[in-house]
Image (cartoon, rainbow, N blue to C red; front, side):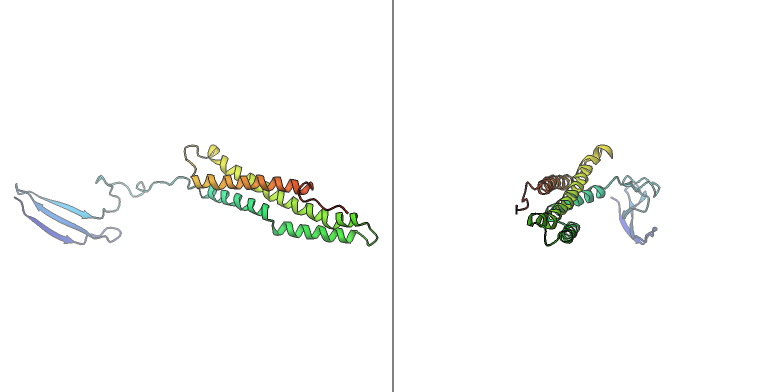
Length: 190
């Protein structure tokens, strides 16, 4: 039987890590040092020593850009359905221009068309532009893996959010066209 003595020493590496060195004496009288604890810098799991720069693997694409594009697509789709500040300002501007261009002697139909019809179409135009931007952003995110890194799969949440953006863009574009052409909620006839 062999005897075992433990010699605890503070072995310092580049990071001042503590290691425990055990000296084991076998039955044949030979001794061996066994180091336990954290591996020294550059040591691999096999016990081989590797250069420090090859121990770090390069990370592949993280998909952050695709995720951001998907979220932007969904947000633009929501904006196209709910309205935007730009659309509100454009609508108010067209309403003011229509009121300035009409006189008090104009017919009611001309005043409604100039004061409200152009404003209604300006709001629809801006909603359609936001919907188109949502649609394009969603399609680009969904098509990106085919042109970027074909071996890298796209995260499922990115696909889901991008499809939501595409869907909201299509709905927003359809509603904007219907609103612009007065098929949906047209101006009242005077």
